[in-house]
Image (cartoon, rainbow, N blue to C red; front, side, top):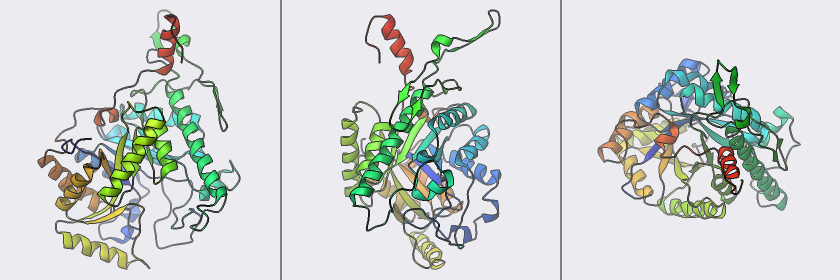
Length: 412
C-alpha cells in the first residue's frame, strides 16, 4: 500500500450508534431501531457517500458491557437488535452500489445454512454481499445449546492454559467454518445451470460437486442448494485484536479489521498480519487491512469534543472502546487517516458514535475531503463489492480441478 494510493472506506452500523448513550442524542431515532426504514436510510446514506461497504453488527445474545458477553442487567443502554443478514437482504434491492456485510457468530451457526444465506444475499444485491465472521462470545452458548460452556473469560484468566486452549480451538473451528462456506460457494460451477427447455435439462449434474469436508468440528458433503454466487466468492471480513485472530484472518479473510491506537502500533499490526499471511501460504493474494476507529465528528474540533463530553456525561463513566475514539473535525480525521495509511493500511472501517449524525459527517464531509485530496473515489466504478476492493473474481476450485484431471494434470 503506497502513501498516495486511494483509501477504502467502510462504516460499521450498530443500533443508534457506537456510543452507549447514542440513543439519547437529540437526533437519534430509538423508536425506529427495529423498523426497516431506519436501516434503509442509513445504508442509503452510506451509498450516497460512495463508501465501499457497510457492516451490520449482530450477536446471538443481548448486548452487554461485560468482557465475556454475559448479561449485565443494564436498562440504560440499547438492548435487542434485528438479524443482520435479514437487514442486508431487506435493503439490497433498494440500493445499487454499496457493499452489504452482515455479521454472524460462527460458533453458534452451521456453515451450510450460512453459505446459503450469504449466497442468496449476493444474488439479491447483484454481487455486493460480504460476510463478517465473528467467533462469538460465551454469552451466546446458552441460547443455542450446541456446545458446553467454555472456561470463564475474565481479565485474570486470559493467560491461563485452559483459556488459551479454548481460544485457539474456537478460532480453528471458525477457520474450518469459513473453509466449508467457501467450498460450498464453489460447489456449483458457474455454468452448471443449463436451462435448456428443448432437452429438459435444467442443470448439468457433472458441474455440481461434493465438497466432502471432514474435520474436527464439521462433516459436510455438499453440494450447496444455491448456485455459485454472482461474485463467485462474496467478500469475507473479520475483526482481529491479537495473534490468534490475525491468524484466522490471514487464513480465511479478504479484509481484516484491526484496532491500532497510533501509527506505530498500526505498522506493527500490519507486519504481524502479513507474517501470518505468508505462513498461511497466501503471500500472493490481496488481504486488505482496515483500521477501525470510533468517530465523533463536528465542523469544529472543540464542538466534537464537547459533544463527546455531553454523551459521556449521560453514563456512569466515560465510554470505552477496543478501537481508538476520535473526536474532531472531518479535516482532522482525514489527516489522521492519511498519516496512518503510511503504516500499510489500505482502508478504514469507521464506527459512527451517533446515528445518523456521525454517519452524515463521514459521507458528506470526510469522504468529499478525502476526494478533494485525491485519495477517495468521486464515483463508483464497479457494481460489485469485490470490484470496489480491487479483488478479482476467483476461479472455481472444482472446475479447475476437473479441467486439470481432463488434461492429465494434478487434481486439487
